[in-house]
Image (cartoon, rainbow, N blue to C red; front, side, top):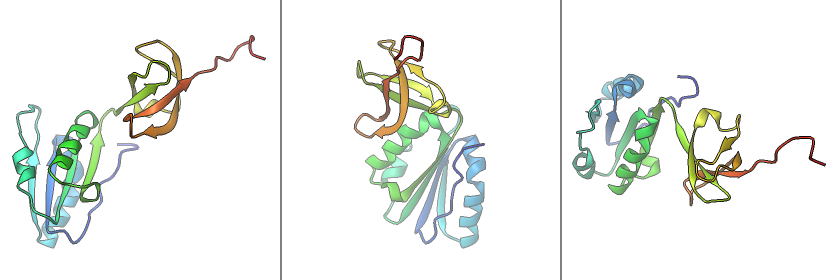
Length: 162
């Protein structure tokens, strides 16, 4: 779990919601125990291997003062974040705890397409645009407009440089 965000207990909420997969449940157990100690209302929705659980109705019926924890694979987390925001949860009313490989998008400065790379390799390696095959240097600049990190042309190092 190196580099993974540890969930933090947020106090003084009316109700707590926990939405997680099996690994996420293990990470949220200390928070759930704390909520039980505080004797505060809570609900848990377990998302198993099959994606047949529809949480939209569950999210829609929540009241103000509810705090949401979502803990699951990075590949699924973003979709659940958007769903929760559609039903009125703000960034301040949610925590996201991801696990597994985190793929991020890199925006190509040439063809304006996105290429997915492993987040762990963000600053270590150059990447190649999967669309135009341009070698890109991935910056630490994230563009909310593009929903991706910006990729710039890589200057080749070689004997022909001045």
